[in-house]
Amino acid sequence: MIPNFDYKKPKTLEEAFLLLEKEGSVALAGGTDVVVNLREEKLQPKLVVDLKALEELKGIKETQEGIWIGALEPVQKIVEHPLIQPYTALVEGAGSIGCLEIRYRATIGGNISNGSPSADSVPGLLLYDAKVVIVSKDGERTTSLESILLGPGKVDLKKGEILKGVILPKAEDGSKSKYYRRTRVKGMDLSGVSLAVYAQNLGIEGKSDIRIALGAVMPTVARGRKGEEILAGKKLTDELLEEAINEILKDVNPRKGSLRAEPEYKKKMVKVLIKKAIFEMNGGAFYEA
Amino acid sequence: MKHSIKLKINDQLYLEEVDPSMTLLQFIRDKIGYTGTKTGCENGECGACTVIMDGEPVRACLILAVEADGTEITTVEGLSDKDKLHPLQQSFIETGAAQCGFCTPGMLMAGKALLDKKPNPSDKDIMDALGGHLCRCTGYKSISKSVEIAIEKMK
Image (cartoon, rainbow over all chains, first blue to last red):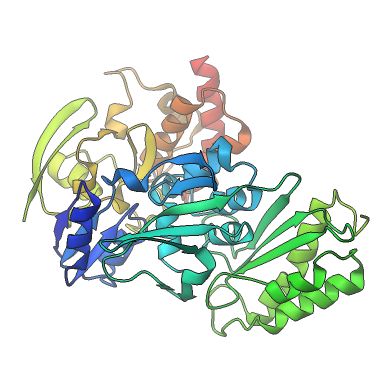
């Protein structure tokens, strides 16, 4: 049994801001985490504010800046939407969340706002330098998704602020990406380690752009920028890739006592999965530009 | 404070007062009395409470009844056409896909939602549709087989 609370479903953003400013209020989107947390009494709100009537938080469409994804869009819609298909790592990551019934309800905004270090939709978004649009009664701010990820369960959303949606910059011609994760069981499970890699002009001197995002190995999902810099514009060799991975691993200190995977395993998998992604995006060949 | 909600379950309209903390699962079972929808893990992990809401399979344990206001829901009780079983139900019986039967309503609704959307699903589609459902008896083979047989029956 869930302890009782008040429930409101505002139809306008203005109404929603007022309700969310109240002491003890909690925002509800798809509910696949919120309802579990209500039942476990990890959340004990006085008021649940259902965001699902807010039209401003909906839609997937092409804009001048790229693709707009409303925060309320269900994960499964992102998996299936034609505009999102070029963003392979996002499609694969989002498609690995829970199971089909969960994906029909869980939203992209919820997956981000939970601030989970293992959020499966986030590595794919980070590869493409996704931006987030945050609204409050004081107006709208647009910032990089990366910059709002603060720590486990912590995102830079203040009281009364609502994540309105995500802007995915246009995917460059010829860019590719992959997402992999390792779990204890094949079916529904949370990632023990996850990895997304983006490549454009892979290994072509002066042009090569490789981006790497890591999940479940740091306090937030994060980019391996120091490693990316080592690879940027260089011809790929075994030694160079090894150097880049080792640089990334310097920042990878998974916590001990995780239910899902030991730190040593996670570190090994980071190495294995980066190599695997590059191998596959290179048509099954190692480093032939 | 109680909220009034209006929704259709198995083509019948219901107008009810509910506490915001009541889940759709509790509503369907305790308020309406359709106990075919099973209470399993109540955590979204087992699939026993799966119903179809506005054409999509969902977990009734992860939805508040108030959130279902204005929706159309089908439970396992709405699957047959009076005395005529749905092809999925027939194939489940023929294949022995129901042993203890506890997961069966959820499996059936997941199968129904799949076939409504994709009458000719791929093997991967079938695995995706059933992938979030736990069955402790059958070993799953007979269940996915039943969905394949139902597809043939419906052609």
